[in-house]
Length: 199
Ligand SMILES: O=C(O)c1ccccc1N[C@@H]1O[C@H](COP(=O)(O)O)[C@@H](O)[C@H]1O
Image (cartoon, rainbow, N blue to C red; front, side, top):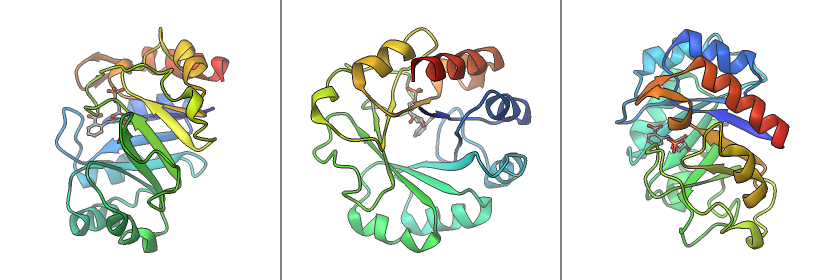
């Protein structure tokens, strides 16, 4: 089970996620209550060991700026939310990043790799909102191993969500917060433990 904790903004919560066994940590570089500056993302990611993927999360930012953000932060993966085209994905292919295509569960093309991405993240319609959806919807679609479930997950729901969806990975932001944009170390620990147990 691949577990990503998203929207981190402090050294303490990054250390908790890494120490609790997260496979990936996400830094939001786009407008959000969790937005961090490129400098902060670079500093926080600098303390992350190489076996944990550091992910730049953007939504709708133009590709030229995305390339600059990746260069400035040194993050190793790129999660693109929004109306990015195949050409946009091709325009970042040379950066050597793990590419994550983030789409809504009702998007037309849910084939993993359809845009050249390594991982497909299937989310609710409004990223980072904590909104849930019917996680059983994609079970019969047989998407394969490389898809990550997101949208409204939390400590109390992740076990059922994994079972219902058949996803090989989970990603959470709002569900491990004590207030909007404020991560809880306790919830991060509990979420990772629950996801590992369910997986
Ligand atoms: O977390 C954010 O604020 C955010 C902002 C813009 C794009 C993506 C964002 N986060 C991603 O949203 C989903 C689900 O989040 P939640 O658990 O429902 O709050 C997840 O993929 C995050 O990586």
